[in-house]
Length: 246
Image (cartoon, rainbow, N blue to C red; front, side, top):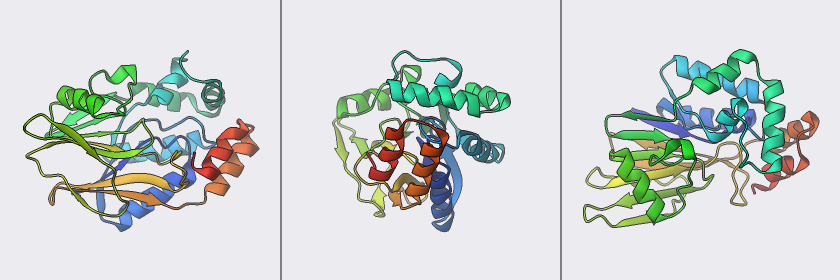
């Protein structure tokens, strides 16, 4: 069953709907949402409602650092992120705040580990941004496949039986072989706030039957999402980042 992997939605309903539609059209039968459902964007309630519906149908849904900050303010967030979270608290229904608080940090099943940040210490929100950090996360996951977000980039790390860890910058739309004789860690990118200069939403499809993963970029109405950010009174830089993909 093809698995859609979506992370860092960040209250961006337009991007989420575009990725879900793209996933369905490309054969997705299962879904995993890897954290940071909220933060930055203008549609936290609609995004949480949408993903909670998927959870009721059996999808994996994880907690990210922005989701945790709704209930537990963090002193490491920059001012813009903290302002967006403060606004989000006022925009969410009490039951939605409780739902975010109840989400797990990490889920394992078979040869797969889902975690927002690093499996080494899921609640520390460490960035997997190097082969060394990827090796730590894969070792802690103890599974063949580890799927993560948090970094907002797309990357594929691998650990050979020799222990050597390397990485690949994926090309969108091209299936990449991930045979089970190696260990793999995929950073699936950000649905709601890409930061590589391309405003198109990012997610990935994992096909376990064929042992492939395909990273995708999905154009969506990012200007409409940015207009909502401005209309909500959120920091203007957040609208600009959506428009420029930075």
